[in-house]
Image (cartoon, rainbow, N blue to C red; front, side, top):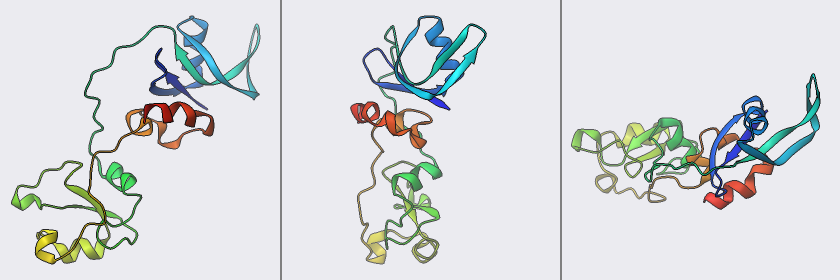
Length: 165
């Protein structure tokens, strides 16, 4: 069981184990907002409700540029595992401007791509192939992207993750 940790300003910070969340609550560094009541945690002194969402008592400063790192898995997830050129199921990623021509490994230059389109396109640009991208690639936004571990979110986290979007 995992717990969503919110900053004092209700912005999502991280996802931690329920044990870590209980330690934060016991040390009065956090307060429980949402709990899982049907699955209590037993201790020598009794039982506690398992926390689903906690909020920190003090505000934690974060760096301004909290950019999501570019990864193959992230590009596929951003594009919903669909090819940026034909819309079929994608299993690879493609540089829109090929690396051989100075294309960077950035969110704006990478798209999910099916194997067929990736092989046909090779080291050419979409303009040279007379292909059109189905969407303009851009960096992902939202709480599920900036909070590590929130990609498999619990349904009770949705209102808090939506605040960060």
